[in-house]
Image 1: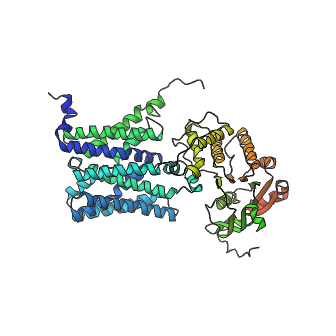
Image 2: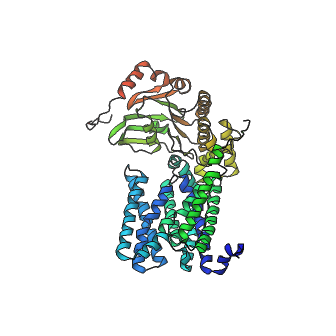
Image 3: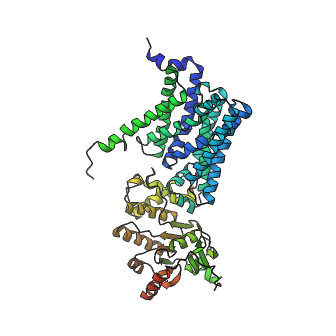
Amino acid sequence: MVTLYDATLGPFAEFGFMRRALVGCFALALGSGPIGTILVIRRMSLMGDALSHAVLPGAALGFILAGLSVPAMSLGGVAAGLAVALLSGLVTRLTPLREDANFAAFYLISLALGVFLVSTHGSNVDLLHLLFGAILAVDDMALILIGAIATVSLFLLAVIYRPLVVECFDPSFLRAVGGRGGLVHTLFLALVVLNLVAGFQALGTLMAVGLMMLPAAAARFWVRELWSLSATSTALALASSFLGLLISFHLDVPSGPAIVLVAGLGYLASVAFGPRDSLRALYLRRGHLEA
Amino acid sequence: MSVASQSAVVFRDITLAYEGHPAVHHLSGSLACGSLTAIVGPNGAGKSTLLKGIVGLMRPAQGAIERASLGRGGIAYLPQHAEIERRFPISVIDTVLLGHWREIGWARPATRELRDAAHGALAAVGLDGFERRPIETLSAGQFQRVLFARLMVQDAELILLDEPFGAVDWRTSEDLLRLIESWHCERRTIAAVLHDLDQVRAYFPDTLLIARECVAWGATREVLMPDNLRRARQMSEAWSAAAGDCRRVPA
């Protein structure tokens, strides 16, 4: 007889790796909530995806030089992600080609370089590890890194919050009043890269962006203000992590895809049933006010 | 220079160009301090380009734009197609408070005093009680009023408006024109790109008629003569992919 406790809290009480995984996801959710929300509002959802792929060659290089070492792979990942973000920013500034096209170009180069590196120097298992992560093998080092990145992210977000909001909402105004929009944009992209690197420890480079984008996209169907969007998407990310880890534990499937699939279900449910602008809200006739 | 000290902006033989092709060609003149000037001309005459040059978003290919040192407030600029994300989740009052950017910057708080100024500006544009409304729920005319409230809050000495009434109805533009008039009474320097010549005749003492080159600049009544308007229409259409280098000697 399986009790509710065995099904839900038991695995976390019993196994250290489950607790570490949950805490890791908790820290990830704190940073990913607001950052994903801003990406969605800035119509940059796919750029998060591009950056997550861009991280691969750096992580692979770290892996080749130092083995499965958290600091080496993270440092490489951050370097590669920042390089792609800064180079595409630079080309966007210097030429008329738009930012999305430049991002696509540089992330494809980066991704191909990463796969090239891994295929010449590693086994297929390593590649799977990099692409899909291994949250059940998150060690103390990785946990500290994820926690540190979450802390830095929330702090830096607080510092650049106002100019970032204006840069999203009315960039020409920020330019006219000399609000350093370019700097803010670059800092924000750096935060995206950092959080993707934190995410790939747990979810892999392919899945890292899932915990960032899916809850943020889903939150749009529940609330409206920026702060409540961020809070909702953090809460959804937490719930997805908790359920995803349990599914992964009970069904013995990889945790990354399990967590992202739960987040995906949350998104689909929000599209269908959320209180704001969802299919239900749009297509069910309701009464209306007098004025 | 005594003349320059009474001018808010001086153009010294400026040419503003896109990929070498001049959009504003060899313009000289000045906006006097406290003047209210309409900038008029056909499409493609360089009106918006001229404002961008004053704001500093575009550098002259030739010549120089001199601005009198502006005190607090600086320039308030309302672009024609502001790249504003109209669905951004921000309230009306927060939008207006951004006008205080020089005081609040990245992180300083909006004090009681600044909030009062923002509320006052909203009342002045006729949007009392709209404070907490998200901007995505506003009509085009209401949103333009919000932007005017933000301009008011900026408290700038130099105000540049690029087709501010392009998408609003008659009543809104009348209200906003009266607001511009009150700024004029406060001795601010204002230049506005406009297409409605009746509005220009009714509210703007000075007019710059431009068609890439200056056609006429001075008192509105004298500038908006049929002769000048006809010349402006003819001059705006000369664009050549194979144009040679301009060798005109500065006057």
